[in-house]
Length: 155
Ligand SMILES: [Zn+2]
Image (cartoon, rainbow, N blue to C red; front, side):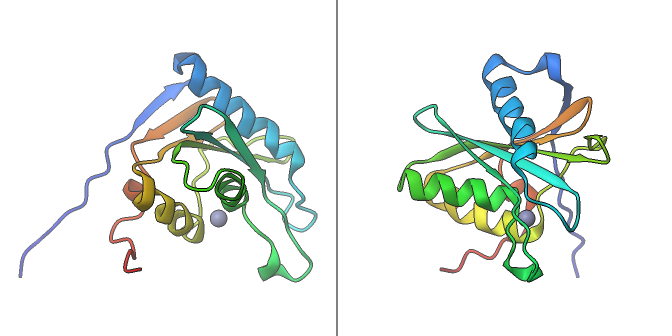
């Protein structure tokens, strides 16, 4: 039997340390929290994806009385991007959450289903960098795969 380990290297930085391009993406994600439809959880999430052509695709979580029918912000943005610009690489995604009258203190992280959905596009077009937004700082990750070790990719 062998011991193995998985090491995740990522960066944490303040908003004023971000590049202008990343700050624009983060602002888009934070702004999208206002477009959330979250009457049940009151947890408003926004996501913004930088496309290969430089444009930004956005999404916000959309809840539904039939709970499984709702969709997270990350998948809303991802599918919006894929449907609007089929075949175009997604280069980076930023995610932010707003709850109880302020942005969430700790950087928000996508759920497993969103990681899997994003992974499909990452496998097709290359790494999608991830920016997880907190109230005062962000985490920068090199890829969706870094958030989803042992990804299911048999398709
Ligand atoms: Zn999700």
